[in-house]
Amino acid sequence: MPITAAVFYLVATFTIVCALGVALSNNVMYSAFSLMGTLLGVVQLLVYVGADFLGVVQLLVYVGGILVLTIFAVMLTHRIADVHVSNRAVGRPLAVVLVAGVLWWMIRVGTAASWVTKAPAAPTPTTYGVGTAFLTDYVLPYEIASIVLLVALIGAVVVSRKEIRG
Image 1 (cartoon, rainbow, N blue to C red):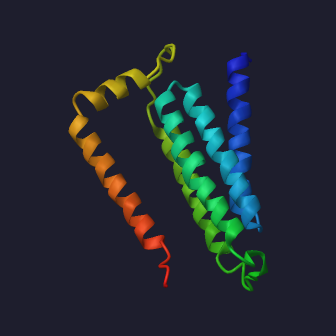
Image 2: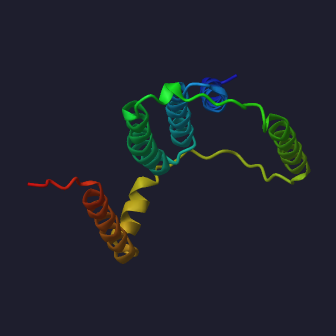
């Protein structure tokens, strides 16, 4: 087995184990850290297949922003560990049936499909092409999106600000 295939299977196994940790953990913090491992594994897989721009976006947006915000929200919430869910196993039989059905359908579709195979090409960076497209053909939607995000950020600051009464 080539070293690249071994690294791929190792990273894929890490990602799947972390995803199972998200789904099966009873502790919110362990689940959040498992989500971080899952998202980092996805970043590694994206870089491995040559989608470097998507990998960097995944790292910055999901791991760097949303997950850190989630961990801070969980850590700053008082007595979150005191929450007791009394009926945890209500949906498990239905979930097992649903997962088994989806798995069966995915295997059936995967084996029935006619896959086009060709020799793999060397991955080429995509960041230059995306950056060029953002600054030439799609500059107007890019700037409009940045203005919308700026307005949303200002709105979030205004909504979360406490009034000082004198």
